[in-house]
Amino acid sequence: MTLTHTNMPARGIAALRILALVCIGSLLAACATPRPAPPPVAAPAPDVVEITPLERAQSLLIEAEYTPDPEPSRQAIDAVLALAEPAQGLLLRAERLWSLLPGEGLENLADRYRGARLAMLADEPGLAYERLPPVDDDRDRSLYYDALALHAELLTGRNAWGEALRARVALDQGLFADPRRQSENQAAIWNLLAAQPPGQLQRLEQLTDDETLRGWSALFLGLREAGDDPDGFAQAVRDWDQAHPRHPAQALLPELRNATLRFIEPPRRIAVLLPLSGSLGDLGNAILEGIVVQFYRAHGATGSLLVFDTAGQPDLADAHYRNALQQGADRVIGPLARESVERVATLDSRVPTLVLNRSSAPLRPPFAALSLSPEDEAQAAAGEALRSGRDRALVLVPEGPFGERVAGAFRDAFELQDGRVTAEHRFQARSPDINAQIGSALGIDASEARIRRVGRQAGLALEADAQIRADIDVIFVAGPARDLRMVVPHLHYHRAGRLPMLATSHAYEGRPQPMLDSDLSGIRFPDAPWLYTELNPEPALRAELAGSEGEDTAAQRLPRFAALGVDAVRVAADLPRYQRAPQLPVHGVAGNWTLQPFTRTWIRDPAWVEFHAGLPRPARPDRVQEPEE
Image 1: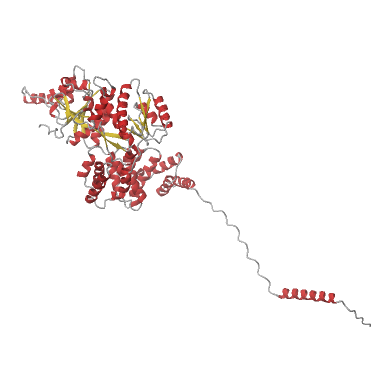
Image 2: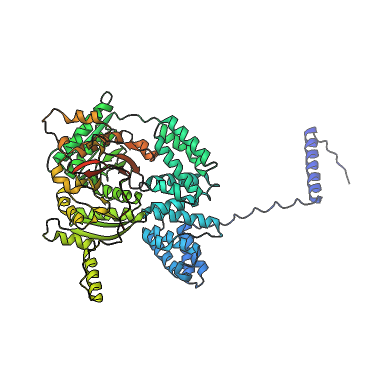
């Protein structure tokens, strides 16, 4: 065997060495421990399904409708109440569940509160009030205060200002931990104080056993007296704080100070919408004359006046109002006719507007009403009677719309303040049996029947004077002067003159007529101070408005409406301030005015006048005496 040797080049040897190294590396790797498997990738979690409040309410309703137990029903009702705007169908289903709760939903405060809230969402505040009568204390304080807040809201909607005030004052002590709610509640307390009938706050301050309520009343009266004088405001607060230390109203004082004393820029352009032609032309021109004389005295150097004739037509009032806004009016006075007021008050406006008649629908900001309303005078008569200690009234008014309006206003105001209208009578002043009508209203017929009955029982022919009924201590007799001249003598004939007799300003025609009005002696009525030299706070202004001697102007023929025009400028100029600080009065020539924040009407505190020998004279405060026995 032959061996053959072959020589390899250096490059080949290097390649073989590299190949050997690679093989050795592979063998070593094969003998090593295997690598761990990579961790498994987590599978994506399934989507979380969120139930909306609406879906939750629907689910709970279905469950409750198939479950006799009341607890699911309560949960379903609460879920519906938690919705921002529950649909009508959901409300009906929740209402049905509520009616099936124990005691038909009235068994406990929590259920009554649920039922009242359902009724409110259904726009039935009367039903809500039935379900949530006066709120008793409850172990669940949060529930108690929530229910008390709703109860106060319901009372306010029913114009039960006194009860609503007491509820808000009781609620306030439970809101210390919630400054926002307490601030809102205290603002409501302040507005409710402003809504109280004349004289009611003085009675609250003097007679109430609730020290906190007494403090609220005292602060309101003190700041009303101080007005917008900074020094007077500061002194009133100091005096009040000394008498009522650590009172919760302290929290409201900074806001009241700012609202009362902050500078209000005077109006630059006032628009006036009045019927200067047509059937209401005389009224409109009398008001305009009062507006003009006061405007140029107070704002003539810096402001301007835009005057529009509405002719008493709602369409024109609407068009002129829009035109006034386009011309840059920053205040509006008018319109006057009720239909025009209701038309304009529906418009979208941010300009402070003082309408001159009441609206059948509630006014909303920026509208407010200033008027010489017969209803206001009837309410003032009710307050005057009660201030004199008289709380049992006979109401005598003429048949027709005027009589119904003033009778209703007197009755409502009188009974709201714990008076009682014992009897009412509608008369026909020109009826041939007017004496019998008045005698019957006074109870003379019943007295004569008693005399005859006693005579028959005793077998005697008794001679006795019939007496007026014993269950009245004041008479409210309203109507135009021409009617009262025919009615009042019969009151005197039946010896009812020993009782105080109150009327409205319609008893006086605005000019002295002692021969015609001699039979009206003793009648007391509210009126504008403007008409009486002894009472008028602005005699120079009236002299300026009277013009030259012998000149016949609307302001001279209708002086009360001229006075309304003067006061309208004063109120309109500072209307934004009064809306924030309703305790502030306006001392006017038609009377002193205060804003009722909830109705947005200005309430007039008039001067009181009394006929003496046929002439009107300022009434003496101590005139009313105890009735004869």
